[in-house]
Image 1 (cartoon, rainbow, N blue to C red):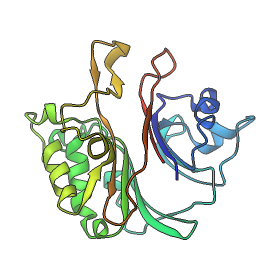
Image 2 (image 1 turned 120 degrees about the vertical axis):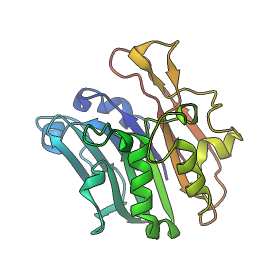
Image 3 (image 1 turned 135 degrees about the vertical axis):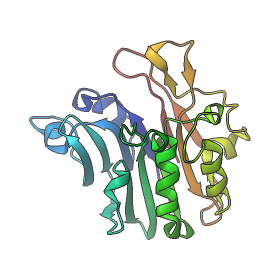
Length: 232
């Protein structure tokens, strides 16, 4: 199974062919335009299943299947954590819960923004974490910002997931410490000197075979400056 997450920074219809060359089974896109806008008058490959949520047609989060994996939004979904989407994924004899994540600002509650939002969400969905899960996307977070006031820090999120044997594949596969990553996934203001690792793929480790390969692709251009994670 190959999963790709990418914050495309809008206008995905103009960039989708770049990602499809990587032949994803499941594609998670942040800052994604609506399905209608994305595939209207488009030569892009049509996904076999999809889910999209957003406040307007230009910017939301999209989850697309380009294989036989099927999606079902869980009834427990709480729109208070609007861009942390719990989806049941089934296919090829497997079933797991996918949390598609785009950690956002929160103007109503400053302390619940970004990683604080993820912390609140995983506590709300904590009963689901006993199943086989994948949490993947743009967390907008890193351990280096633990000093910032939040309802939950980056380290507290990592610790809570680890207690349930859910780990970052990047850190586990490459034996890296949180906050000491060698591969940035984001360039602030497209400045290579302002690089950060803020995108993650956490996965239940015990219930899956040993990870064979983890590949990180990257883009650094006017069109897109956020890296991709690919899981094989």
